[in-house]
Amino acid sequence: MRIGIAGLMAAVLLVAGLSGCTVTATLVEDEIIEQRLDTLRGPRVSVETFNGRISVVTGSDTSIDIRVVKRGSGTSQADAERDLAMVEHTITQEPGRVTITVRRLDRPLTLGNSGADVELAVPLDAALELRTSNGRIESANVTGSILARTSNGGVTIRDGEDVDAETSNGPLSVSAAGGRLELRTSNGSLDVIAAEEALVSAETSNGAISFSGSLAAGDHAFRTSNAALSISMPTDSEFTMDGHTSNASVSSSFPLAVAQDALTGSVGEEPDVRISAVTSNGDLTVTGQP
Image 1 (cartoon, rainbow, N blue to C red):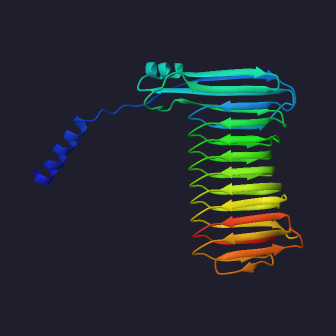
Image 2: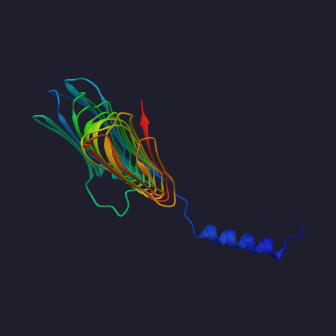
Image 3: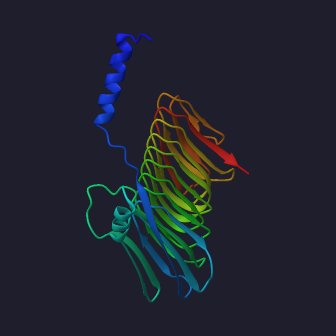
């Protein structure tokens, strides 16, 4: 059998490439911690972790259920176990407050798959402070104030009064919330759904903003770029609008002044809701809902 020079050269290059490579597998070791704490109504619950998600749902009115899943990784089981030993968790309780913290005891050059997920079931009226990195945050049906911070992960919040949420490189969604809503992301969409008398500051970039619901009296700001911006409010809403875009269209079902790239004007006799809406390279739309 004859083998061409090109085939021989390809074989030589393949062998040479493999001789300089070491193929290794990453093993993961985990540890699960579960704990229940008795509490009074309306506790403040603080969580800080890394490389993991935080998930919160409602549970008993008089207790908090905690589940922490810690992870360590390495090229062998022994390495993974040593890495896991460097992931420390603490759970502390003071009157009216519970704090869950997960951190590294050392400062490795890379974290690998080291990290921890935290899952909670809390009283309905708890106040939440949730912080992580490289992981998503989810809160469902908790009616207290909510602070959420992450990066490289999405944030999804349902209910809550006064929500301060920030992420990057991920979507942010808040539904059925009221009070002051301070919402920030980048390179991701931002959706506010069925807001109830909310005071809104919503900002993203390279992602669409969508708002539906009712607005409280005061100043509201919606800002994005390179994406669409849509605002939907009850048809009987009264407000002033200062809206702008570029390289895109504008439209409104309310009696506003419609220019090539702007929506401006007032709806109602003495509106106390003031809206600033700015985007670029994306349509700006304001509509009424029943």
